[in-house]
Image (tube, rainbow, N blue to C red; front, top):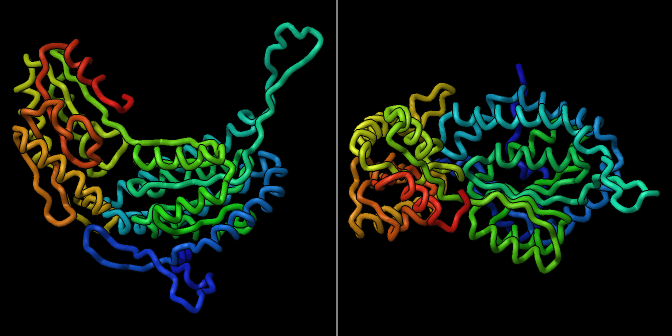
Length: 408
């Protein structure tokens, strides 16, 4: 029998006499509170940063193939604990176990690739000598030092694990802050590193909310990798700029689908619905607006309506869930989705299927009669709303798709 992962971190901490604030583990599907973890204090943040700086001196000297070998041990630990991992992610986010499993598979696929390619990617490479005929030049990749990884709640494993192991492979040490909404998944990742003692000294996990993230940036890591909203990304960029800390950001979007006359309309509708509703629409590359040329608009809507009405929403802890969609994970995000729907309806949009929310469950919703005065067509919704807009032709579709502040 494989050992289960211990998700209680309190036993590893010496708590002060004043009770330390905690983050609860709350299942958004059921409302169940299934644990908690202490929020890192300013002193713990400073201590972690100092610890990772010291550890970096050792880790950066390890050959790339040795780093890859140790991460191979971590990979085997992950595979051995698939049941624990998917159960925790599903409980933490409300998503089906199958979707949680896809997070792990995608992460392990990347880890296999990166371990195999790292030595080649990180070796020195010659570059042109230009006019300096009697000199030779090369680029020698160097690690930054301590990398701060701040992860989101929609994919708490897949959008955390690859940045962590990428930084480690490149010779950095890592401080990881999971989202306060899905802290249990952060504890899960923490527990996985516990299973590889040779790797454990080079990763430190700290828990907290936005204030904790701000304190971590003030502690001056050498690089920041942030995944989350454009608004939070802007705040992080401004804060990091004062200390000249480089930042890599993966932010939100307002991605468009365009359906033209020659499309296979049934398949176009099926995959637009899937793209809008997968992971309950909580994906930064979700289809958030659809432009359909008027000659096929009605037929496309007929297919889309059938597919969206077939979506089963609910929660099951079983490995093979009967549901396609779970709840909205973050209550704050549910409020955004409801605001976008209310704004659209007030401006003349029609609901063909779905809406409104029932508790944390927001149904797959098909909207028509939409235009660019509406928030649902301009701002990131991050929920299972699929607004469909009729356009005259391909040129108008392209113009409207580009009429947005987000990248495509």
